[in-house]
Length: 115
Image (cartoon, rainbow, N blue to C red; front, side):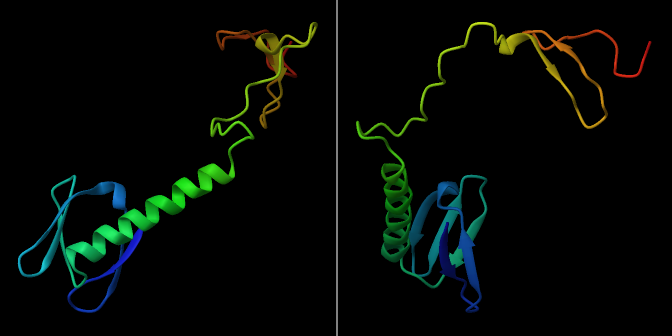
């Protein structure tokens, strides 16, 4: 997100991922991917610099979270423990509906309290 200023001096925050293009003739007009147009006080060059600065900060946050090998991917799940079959577990929801749930998501058995 980048902060810009409308022509009436009101601040505006724009999702930089939605910017399709920026043109300057003579005012700076930002066209979004949905076709909306926004006129701002900042120059096209200033808008570009703010987008680049924002994206750098996002990527810098990813590298801070990466592991020692430089991978920014989340860690792999640990191997399954024998006897602990997660695909056939009992879930107890807020509605006290404890039933067996198979790997395909189907529930088996009766709700708790039902005979």
